[in-house]
View (tube, rainbow, N blue to C red):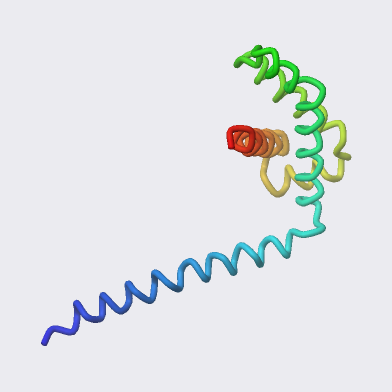
Amino acid sequence: MDLQPILETIINGVLVVVIPVVTTAAIAFVREKVKGSQIEEAIDIVLDAVDETNQTFADQLRADGKFDEYHQKEALEKSLKKSLSMMNERMLKFLDKEFNDAEAWIVSKIESACKINKAERSA
C-alpha cells in the first residue's frame, strides 16, 4: 500500500482548511494593530477627501453624463490635493517612511476608494 497519495490527500485537506483560517487571523491581527494608528488616520483623511470630491465635483458630472477620463483624472488630482492639505508634515513623513512614497500611497488609496464607490453605484 502506497502511503504517499494518502499523505498528500491529508496534507492538502489540512492546508485547504488551515490557510484561510490563518490568513483571516493574520488580517484581523494587522487590522487591530493598525487601528487608531497614523495609517488609519491617513486612510480616513483620504476617504474624506474622496467623498468631498464626489460631492462637490464628480457627482454632478456623472449626473450630466460628462464624467469622462479627463474628469476622472481631474477628480483624482482634487482628491490628492485635498488629502495632502489635510495631512500634517509628521503624517506625510511617516507615510514616506512606511511606504517609500506618501503621494503614491495616497493615490493608491484614492483609486481603491473610487473602485469601491463605483462597485456600490453599480449594485
